[in-house]
Each structure stands twice: as C-alpha cells, then as structure tokens.
Image: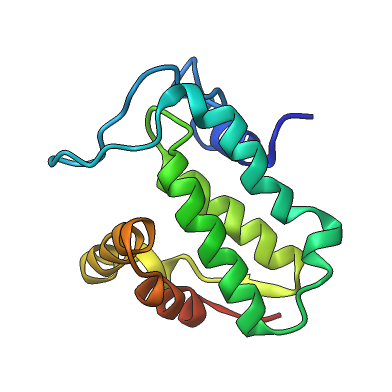
Length: 149
C-alpha cells in the first residue's frame, strides 16, 4: 500500500491531475515569494521517515489532547517542509491530519483552519512559522480545531 498522504492526495486530485498521488520530481517554490521547499530528490526518503511516527504503535502512545495536538503540529510542519507534491500539499496534509485525529477519537474541524480569509491567513502564517522557527501559532490553531468525538 502507498503512503497514506499519497492516497489522500490521489483522492483529492485524481480527477484533476495525472500525477495525483505521486511524489514531485522537481524543485517547488511556494507562493508568490521565494519560499523553497525540500529538495525533490529527498522527498520520498524524508516522507517515509516522517510517517514512521504515525504508526499504530506510535499513535497508541498518545494519551491526551495536548499530546495529539503536538503530534499533528509536528506532522503538519514536517510534511509542509517536505512538500511531497507539485500542488495540493496543504489540502492533502489537512485531510491526512483529519484522518489521524479521527482515528484517535477526535474531530478535526478544518473550517477553523481555513474556513474564511482571516483563518486562512492565520493558518498560512502559522505553517510558515512552524517550518522555519516556531510552531507556537500552529499548535494554537490545531488545538482549537480538534475536540473529542
């Protein structure tokens, strides 16, 4: 079976892109400014390493909402830096995190992350900060977005 994040990307974009669910094979810059991502030849190996922290065994060690928020924040920041796809990374990451949260008995309300322009700006800012220097803002957003089922 493919990596779950690849399956999320394929489910979201398979009807649009022939390359949906496949690792990117060239450099990518995010947004209108120079925001480089991980080198494309490191993507597969790095994503595999990142997702090792998302096995049933690893997830079973999570005992609180705070621990889950930390795990989801770490996953989000790492996958956003890896940037495995040409396009659609954010939506794929959010879907993947929603699945992880649900598996752990939590609802992940994505509307709280990107439901309106203000939330979307705060979310993009938090992701950039989490990738480059501080995950504090992303922790706060994800904490507000999840609640026990």
